[in-house]
Image (tube, rainbow, N blue to C red; front, side, top):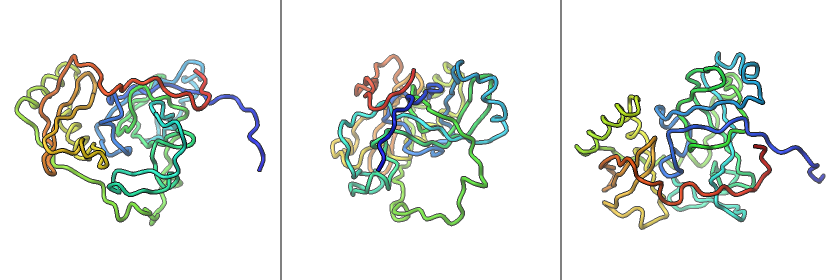
Amino acid sequence: MTAMTEAAPLQIVGNLRSCFREKFGTPRQPLLVPGATASLTVRKEFLPEHSLIGLERFSHVWLISYFHLNTNKTFRPKVHPPRLRGETIGVFASRAPHRPSPVGLSLARLVKVDGPTLHLAGIDLVDGTPILDVKPYIPDWDSVPNASPGWLAGAPFPTLKVRFAARALEDVAAAQRRLKVSGLKRLLRDVLSQDLRNPRDKSQNRDGLELGFFLYDFDTMFSVRGRTATVLRLDTGAEMHKKARREPPRRVGLAR
């Protein structure tokens, strides 16, 4: 085995501006929430006026990202994917963010290219995520017919029905006017239908417990009873909770 030679640090081409403000509430996989939007402005030193030529002709792109909010300090060879309901699997048989090298791979819909900025949808990344690279999705090469889904075949994604309290519907309408966005109710339904809760956290899974996650500029408050999630209200002016903006661990050299 040869030793890794000294190499230049990985470059950050830009930091994602996402509608998701913290890890809790961010979809676990890309394209699960089609209305989840984000933008990526490529830094000037990478000459976007030249380096982005031709990208607008593709419908989807791969985003190579750095999991900057990871808190794991030691390597664990096994992880607990939410859909396995507490069972374990090897880290390399999963897409868990807690990896030896905290690098992510996301497929996003490319809405448009506007100068140095990519407008994206179907995002599964939190606001501020460093993007290491962008590559076009090429259907002829990136899609494999009859590929095996592995252990996922026997582990369907947990889903919830979603309803909105009267107060929440008023808040959604007000947020759409304030933010000048549309489809917010559909976005919230798609996010919550995936069941955000950690199945291994018994306290988080108590019936009727009030939970919240940040989206845009508001805290979405909801509760779950049985298999139904109810959006209770949208709180604006609240502070980010659960120390969502931790100082990122320095595990690899990233040029800034």
